[in-house]
Length: 436
Image (tube, rainbow, N blue to C red; front, side, top):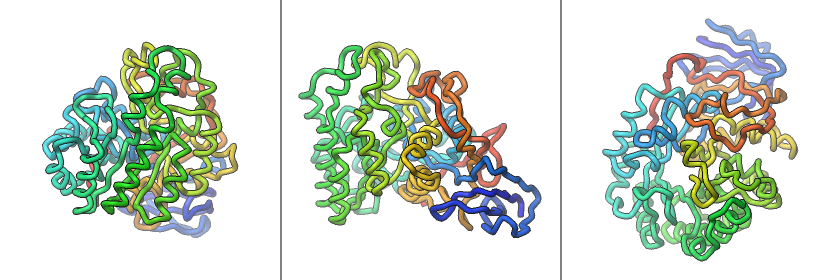
């Protein structure tokens, strides 16, 4: 073997076992008992205080590069990912310039990333008014699916689809097996809600009511049912929509859903005046809603947990809740943030791995990612689950020192991250991925 990990705790097959893991040419070649005598050119022996996890897969990351690289960039984002045990990300099609809505823009994005990524990186395409004819070309060029908005995206160059446009795009995707991932908030509901201006988080929360998500998700379900398209609900915040998704799935609708660490960690009741670092859309909701999201994960209705890492400059986060940019920077912190909350509710590390590695890999069709198994890529996270730390935003690797997690105590420290059998240190060697 090129590399052997000997670990008394390894997460695989939905549980933990003491294993020796052998690696050849960047792939896992053997999973054997700890005392099997497996040998290699390099042997890494882990202590009982650490757990070997598969590298995490974060399928919802806004790198914003090129075009808004002062917000984030491929070097900083992927270095933060690696520091957080994430070995694969899929980059969103908006906030970069040009947005990834045609093959030419995808080529610009890939060229910007080439040679600058510390982890493996794939790309989403975008579905906007007027680019119906570009969707198949993007699919053939290797994007993992297509993102759309049902209301203003926050940037004018990525406009939303109306119901007719969504149905038309879903029919087009069905023709070639594409997947639509949806920012599901209803524009009309939000237009009739109170304005978000001011320093009080409660006022911002009223401006993005759960009904906006519920109505939009119901529309997506109906159109998916009508067209046969595969759909995925992004960053689920409203727990009221969980029964809708469960019922649709029972009826045979091809629908999956994700939520994010911030919805599982924070609660509206604890967000103070002017704390715009907590602003995101849809918003962080009340404590009771948070517990229902955890129940949705436990029941398997919510499939995965991804960051929705959406950073910006510190200047854009200033002001009141109406003016500040909506997004939370958390790419480096997702694993300890989720583990901190999960362990308090009786979940195991195997559950966290299923939500943050295996399920997102399955969602985007990366069969060799997100699991420790023979034939998989040798992507690993060495995690100390009982070690605690307090988040210091100055020590995070993403570009701008803004994070809702600053000052928050978390459980679990990433001690090392390995990509295809090589520890991530020094120069970047990540690869650009295409849909298989």
